[in-house]
Amino acid sequence: MHLFSILIFCVSFSAFPVLAVITDDFSKLPKRKYDFIIVGGGTAGSVLANRLTELNRWNVLLVEAGPSHEGVFDSAVPGFAGRLSRSLYDWNYTSIPQASMNNRTQNAPRGHILGGSSSINGLAYTRSSASDYDRWALHTGDEGWSWNQLLPYFLKSERWTRPSSGEDTTGKYDPKFHSANGLVSVSISGQPLASDVKIARAIEELSGGFSFDPDPNDGTPLGIGWHQVTVLNGTRSSAATAYLGGRFASRKNLHVLVNHQVTRVTQTSHSPTVEFRGVSVMNQGGGPTHLFQLTAKKEVIVSAGSYATPQLLMLSGIGDPSELIKLGIQPLVNLPSVGKNLSDHPRFTMSWQLGTSNVIDPATNSTLQDEFLEQWLTNRTGPLSAPSLNQVGWLRLPEDSGLWDEFEDPASGPNAPHINAGPRGGGLYPLPGPLFQATCALTVPQSRGTVKLQSTNPRDHPLIDFGMFTHPFDIRALRDGVRLLVKFVSTPAFADYGLTPAGPFLGVDLDDDAAVYEVLRDATSNNAHPVGTAAMSARGASYGVVDPDLKVKRVKGLRVVDASIMPYIPVGHTQAPVYAIAERAADMIKGAWLT
Image 1 (cartoon, helix red, strand yellow):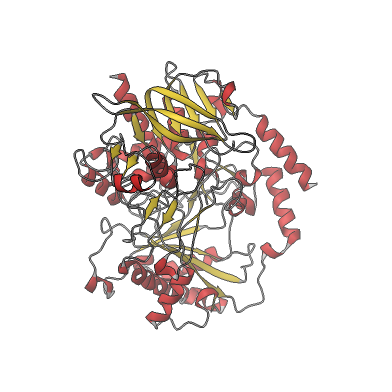
Image 2: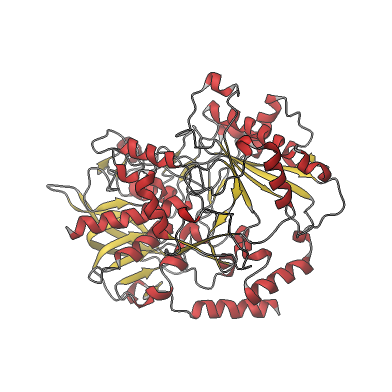
């Protein structure tokens, strides 16, 4: 019954007219000359493809290494997001061993599918702190990157909707900071959990830094508020579904080539200015390998993400000459910052066992799982219609923390949190699950890593080094994060749960810093928020990869638009900022070519 329903869903989902031209066969592209060639059909690339083809006279080719998102059931179902990591739709990157984390390697998920990571991520929609963007503006000398000037682009991309449950969202967000006219649907879960009441009571009992936040996306994310997610009527709203589907199917000037990887951007002019307006494209999958060459009349825009973008630039001779020469690559543009400044949010999870038998664990109950799936297939409601996280916390470390005796506050401002907490109780309302858990991520990491080439073969994954815990602030700040979480669950609100430690901190003396550090080295991972590897800087700066207009320095015809351009990692999840970056980039590109 369920298998048949899923097959019907996949067929019907694929039957909708999603794109004007979508093909995995290079020979079937109706044109060979394009005004813009966009490398990477992920979050930013999908936005650009949509916005640039608003002008009928511009022909745009979007090249995606992965397959189409059409009919990918696990991507469509919000509750199945966890199935997508280490799947066909993930690049399946792995870091090099992390010396400061007991030489562990880490998975580094990135979307290998149309829509990119917006098609496989946890659907979180968080804009971060206003001061994060004001710092970008100061760093680049471009006020266009400030919060006040980026907020219209956040609003341009967003369409606020009610959850599929029909729950009234009044009081759970601030309408002044949201839009109903954009393309990416944003909502709250709408699925109650038994822990909702406990969390609300704990907020009241603690107040202060744990106070209720009416809307974490208003630019001042401090406290605990309702978690906002990219969901439309119980189905994932991705860059592919929002920007490349539906009414955009009639655009004859938008062509999408899937299952093809751009292996290099190619130099098309040497004098008087170095120009890179060409690309080499290679088919993916089985069968013989074929290479194709294309040239853009106006620009090549690289939107391949924080791992693949620096890899592509370096394969093309753009990077640190000393590193390129070692691999036999001829340096063409001297930009040593390519692949440097990798930043991500280190994250771990704390768990507590409930001391009551009145719990339920749907994950181990196949009957419930079948019922959830049937409910979702029938009307897109139920536990599978949203992620299993209802609240999100944005916390600052205490002013009396010993950290401030050794380190300056790295946050961008007083309204920027140091810790992102995700409390969740699981179960099936009104019963809780057997564990209460809370993720804890450091939002202001000071450690930096690198992305380097493994070889000159574009099929080889790059060498990803997060450099986690290489700066002493990070592990010490997470130690304080442990204490914040313990303080939260120690409130009277949770007393009848009878919580006892479980998971990685079981049996650990939390007052013993050395013991806590050892657990953190074993249990912390990246948060799948890589940024900064093609960072922007002020015009004329001796460092950085792109100027504030996102054009690659010392080059014409080449621009980068994705999370790699962020000079500093924002405090929140990176999906929403990338939408805003891409929306602004589209306007900058239009302005450059229409004047």
